[in-house]
Amino acid sequence: MAVQGSFDELGVPLRDVTFVVVDLETTGGSPVTSGITEIGAVKVRGGVVLGEFHTLVNPGEPIPPFIAVLTGITNTMVANAPRVGSAVPAFLDFARDCVLVAHNAPFDLGFLKAACATLDIRWPGFDSVDTARLARRVLTRDEAPNCKLATLARVLRATVQPSHRALDDARATVDVMHVLFERLAGLGVSSLDELRTFTGQVTSQQRGKRHLADVMPHSPGVYLFRDERGRVLYVGKAKDLRARVRSYFTSSEMRQRIVEMVAVAHDVIPIVCATELEAQVRELRLIAQHKPPYNRRSKFPERSVWVKLTVEPFPRLSIVRAVKDDAGSYLGPFSSTREAELAVAAVHEAVPLRQCHLRLNPRRPVSACLLAEMGRCGAPCDGRQSVDEYAVHVSLVRDAIERDARAVVKTLMRRIETLAAMLRYEDAAAQRDRLAVFVRAAARGQRLGALAGCRQLVAARPTAAHGYEVAVIRHGRLAAAGVVPPGAAPRPYVDALIATAETALADTLGPAVAGSVVAVGPTAYASAEEIESVLRWLESPGTRLVELDGAWACPAYGAGGQRMLLDLAIEVGNDADPLGDRRDLRPVHQPARAS
Image (cartoon, rainbow, N blue to C red; front, side, top):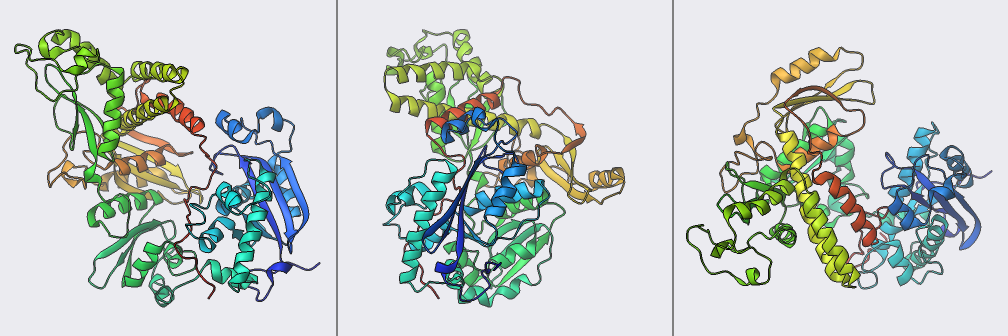
């Protein structure tokens, strides 16, 4: 039997290549925590369909309700379906000696590779084509606003429209692929080798600087691209420094701003880290320190804003830039003033706090504003509401921010339901979105504050080599990280890390405001992003708590539980696609041409 050639083989015409276009439906977006529920595939060569493969798959776990709504695949439908141990080998046999094609290939192939790893099956090493990336190179923005399958199927007039069912989506991808191949033929692309050259053109500047990766070690860490003057252009992290830095000089790098950065880069500085967590944290700190022009995120943590419940006889909500050492309650941090304003609006819809900016004195009444006449404020300004009566509303808001958001959420949900019953769907959606901003901010603040309140926390996580990653965390800040070798006694390594760990001081914090130091609050010792990186590591499977100095707990009725329900409602309400391509690929301004 002839074996299908690889991308490295020259001159194989596209019309002679057997492609298997595959699509999966799953219970979620990650192959680590989710399972396959359906596999659909179409085998095609020279524009002719040679066969189709389709099967439902029992994922061995319940299908989340919003996934069932999205795909139409229910627990009942997969109850008697083959398990992944039967379905995946059958698909691999169907696709043998072919080139795999998928729209958002990293998603579909990621699940298939994860299934093979679980089943102890060697991945066949298929060549693959991602029609989403290909469309980005072929189409213009005038033709398609994005590279989602539904958009391309409509724009390119596919005979089958995607429906979040595997076989329909695979058939739609076949139509999209054929139209893209027709476009490529007009550009002189007619073979596998030419397709590879087209989808991954490398500039001369990229080729000429490949040697910069030669000094990189095969270790986790952080890398800094610098120009001739030593100015940091870009900071990134990697599990394998050499492999990641090399990718900047190959066809896999398609971001235009990064290609421009490589063109002016003079050298790359590696910083080897003991663990991936240390690399993530160092990346955040270095970006905040250097503010590299080619990094987009995490550059200005000092620009975060908070919503403060002020300290005065008649407290109000105020948007501020820093947390102070006072008796105020703080909601946040928010990435923008706009988000903070939405959260404030949500609270004002639920609780009749005053919205004026005057500092009121109970002994000196002033005229009431229009809100009092509308019944949206108790008018403490003119004496209609006493300090004690007003304090009931203040206590409700403080509880929602710090410990129990149920009352505020319940009040706003009733209002949303009322608006929906009146067919005022846009108003209901706007109210829902404001509530979501408030709940997410409260949940975030409670999570950050819980960890930041621990004087010291030591945790360990098993490594693939049967050793342990160890982290020492002080007030939410990563103070030390290390690795216990396989077979070694962990305690001496843990004690050594604790003894040499960084002392958490407020003046070590990167995100200071106008040169001052944030001395209190959940971000007093580390940025919110750093604490969230540490939390993700702590919450990952297998992580064990070694030592704890303090209490690490979120409120039993805090905003976290409300957030899960609200996020689910928004996801279903917006017909969001949790399984969609998160890369946000868009056609380039001018399509590339074959080199």
